[in-house]
Length: 477
Image (cartoon, rainbow, N blue to C red; front, side, top):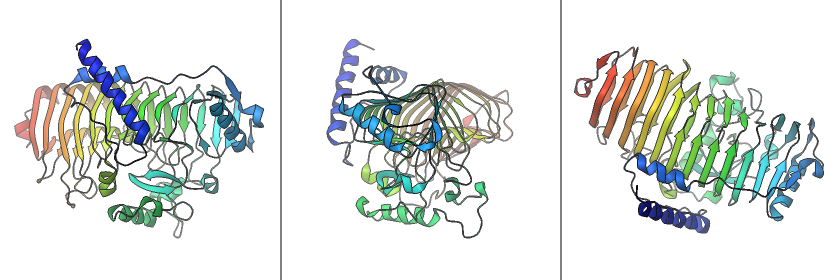
């Protein structure tokens, strides 16, 4: 790629960040970018993703009255440390070794929350502490709900680093039972989010103003764990995140996000590992995920409400990550109504009998939206319980909706798998077929059943083997 082209990309990137700073809170932020044409674009994206730097000045939470005894509520001390650090121009808010009990943490600009090895920040699972409500998304619909456990709104230059642990304290006594699923063996009469989920979805469909979508106490919509919102220049590095109430890391309306060497473990309902939601320029590298739902799921809003906001997730790099248990390893969807484009995934390892799909796309005729320019290469899969590659346009509501989801330009190279039910499970809609799927140099062993290819136009295969035999796309349709 020429220097001139790199310079043009950098100038375009700068314009995007200026637009973000000036109007990310508005629903209309939609940066214009050149359409991705291949892996050269990944190089350009990486060139402009820069982790924030911080002043080498420490604000220890102990100076503000925090105690590492696992019993003292340190919420106020942590908030004071963050406030003074930010007001002083930034630096490190530090935790010595020990267990630090707290309610929600609201990060501010130029603050690196440094949790070193041997330190655990443990969140108190009392829902009342996560009030008042904040503006967020819940399963892709904007809402005023409980604060995420770690939150920011409209900030810049933020980090969580250090080698320590963030523990959300969720289990079958706290947070998880609100899902209403069988996971925690609910009893008749136990509260759950089913009614509120439908009410919120209906509000999104009816364009009810977000200010009137006030949930929180009594509605049982679980908060996410780490959610910077409408923010930029984010770094989450060298920490372990366990026992999330719901989605673990979910940057929302953010730009320039780096998530590096993070370990996420949690097997509760809907405990996705990392879900960039309507974000631009995202790097996820050298992470590991062992989750109760999708390991990584790229999102951009649900149904009509996602189309109203109309902010895609775009320009994302995922590399050198490991996935164990989960529904999908590397997933796009299902909340993709704002669109997802220009995603590059390489050198990842996925392996578990409790991992359903390796490379997963999920959408339907209610979601709509466009998924395009998605590139995978050098992916090694040990085993999955269902499909190595699944593109499912019949997810949940399926064809029952007014929209025509677009899935196109998917490039998959050098993907191997040792064991699965299906090598490929590709199901488009009659009214909106999947288009232009390319596979090259792939080898799928021990696939128990023939691949499923329905409503796909432009499936190309070069040197693709399933159970030792060359795969013929026309024979599968």
